[in-house]
Length: 482
Image (cartoon, rainbow, N blue to C red; front, side, top):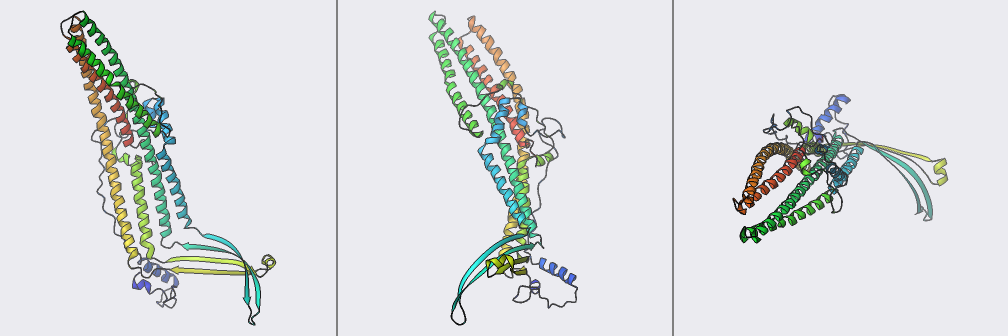
């Protein structure tokens, strides 16, 4: 507090010095006093200038043009798979991390109630019967009974808005936790959907490998018959046997991957490790069209951006409360009650007691503690301002990457279709040449490998395309809006 402000207090009393004579009216003096005392607050540095620039359009536009509606909140229904929808719904209800996040929301809701209670009066009641044995003036002991009951009401006048700032900080923190719970829900939904699609991709790869193993078995049997009748060499039969064993070797790791993926999804959904119900096969799943919208719309949909914004608001409010610690506080206290020396008279003929107190208190010297705390709170505000900008930039990058991934994967799918068509035609020709004796089994074997590689790549590409749609939904905020 400055010297001018300190002079407003009567020496040694902590009460306003009524002896000041400045020729002002009472109202003008009160206004002047408030202005002088307001200068006693600690000095807070200004916030850092923003360097955030939101682009006007995406680099890789995919989907409808700007102005398209935002993604639906339950976007996982867009894949048209009841098993996928049921899994995501179960995960959103039972996931352990989500339960923790929701419990934190309840905690911060209660903290908001605590902060808001500071702006309201507090009332307490107590009753205290007392029995005392004392000595009279003549040295004779005597016993007295005192029965007393009283209530106390106190209220702090929020002259500077410090209590209101505490409530604002608690409200912003509560909103930030709600946004954090939404962000956790969005993440769990995306993980469940992506994991399920990966599971269906593994199922499709297992089916393809088992079908390939059946073809390898037929080729092995044909090579063995031709070797036994002397039509081909033992080398071709051994090569057919090796290809059969190579296909059989790929089945156990696929089954292991499916087993582990099922367990991971079961735990994610809040259950014990176990099997997962299947719905539509991978071939029937189609990536839904995802509306891209404008980059500025992303700021209203992403819960993690809302969380960063609310944290910044809470930090600003906390800075106000820290800065104003040097300002005086004004409290009103009223105490009333009854007292008597006999319990019967306490109810019938009590003696009324009361007390009314007005208190003004302010620190005079704190060694720079409040200013240091204010500087620390300002630094935290700056950190959260930078964190907000980072959250926005990260969201823009994730959305750009998601849009770009969909575009490139679709282009890759076109090339894969052409590659597979060529590989299938090559196998048909190689098989006819081998069957008619114009070529060795090596040509057909090489064509089979090429087609199998194209088929595996096709399944993996379809899975990645579906998962990229999930990633884009998550990057776009998934329909959540604060």
